[in-house]
Image (cartoon, rainbow, N blue to C red):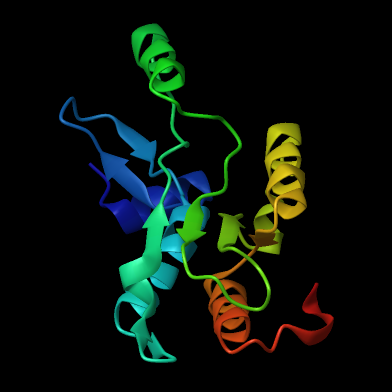
Length: 156
């Protein structure tokens, strides 16, 4: 029986591996977009800008994930809309009603922007919101800070 290191060496992979209850070894699913978004939320919860704790006004829209037929139907019937941005910052600033951020995985993961995400971004921008795609926690944190300090400048 191989330990994880020996198994990775044997199969020529550096992927993180998990052993299931059934004893089968499989690759752990990487979720770089989720990790970046979690970092933004953790930062927001402890960051004060202009007297406001950013995290008090930041929320996540649960649009991602695979759903079965009933859950997909319920999602739509309850007002869910595929493609809506991941993060909502409900603070008016920099001449906008609020900020919407669609988190994407860092560039090296080649995360594609879907048509419905472009459509939502355009609709929101046309209604006076700032809707932006960010490929890292650092990019999102800089955007939020610049937005709240009204220092967007050439970013738009």
